[in-house]
Length: 252
Ligand SMILES: [Zn+2]
Image (cartoon, rainbow, N blue to C red; front, side, top):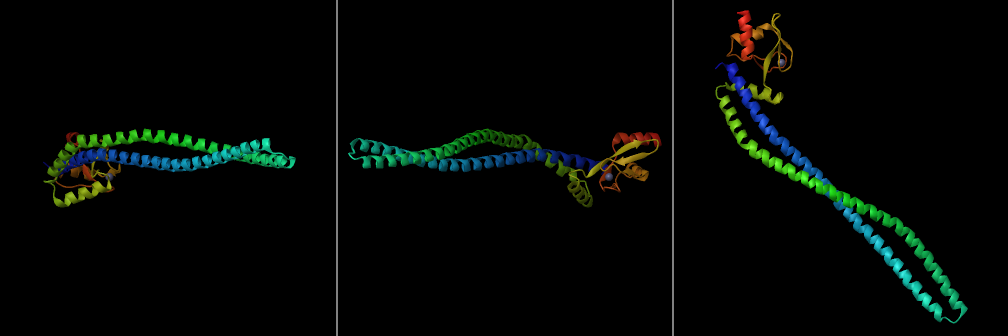
């Protein structure tokens, strides 16, 4: 097999490995991002739950204050039945009125605090529901990772072995070049020739789409054990069997 064909086979094997590991990585990325979002929701829920506790304490304190005032008022009312002088009576009356004013003030404030308490309760319930739903998404993402690992795992091992085999007949310097290009072009180290116009002998690189001089096409057909690269993007060029035959048949 000519070197150009061996490089193409290596490229196919390499792409199979990249495709399979890419699927696994995509699942892992999705799982991580879902987990991150769940963590944020749970943090927010904990924060709101703490605020809710404090708010509940504020309201409880106010309820207690009102209860104490009510007790005092009841006591005064009893005293009013037993007092003998007008002076004592009016003193109790003044005190009771003061207590009523105080109670109204607390009640007004308490209304605002209770509204805030309601808001926090709603917020907590909403966050609870959201994190509950999101937990399901995380579980699904985790299951997807496991499934992908099971499905891809064996195939990936096979593909890696296949790629390893494909490297055996590639000279080390070509292999280094192939790997470097693969890093630069996300696994696209090899580019096929594309035909624009056969009569006018116009061809371009399938990687960067720049047009190629006809000597390169001739080289790919005549010197198939040579590594020929695109002058623009440096990808290793490859000519497909059917195109080569078509050109050969026409040009002779
Ligand atoms: Zn190119």
